[in-house]
Length: 57
Image (cartoon, rainbow, N blue to C red):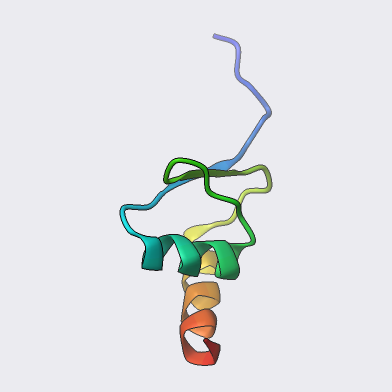
């Protein structure tokens, strides 16, 4: 089995508020409620970024 070294995050949003939050906190651009981030963010990195955006926002 061949494995790919390409790693990314795939985000899906169901509403405008979530899209805006994810866009700002994670620096991603959404198209049709989906975004791809080429640099991998771990779950332990995502939560503090979202929390920080909510507190600052």
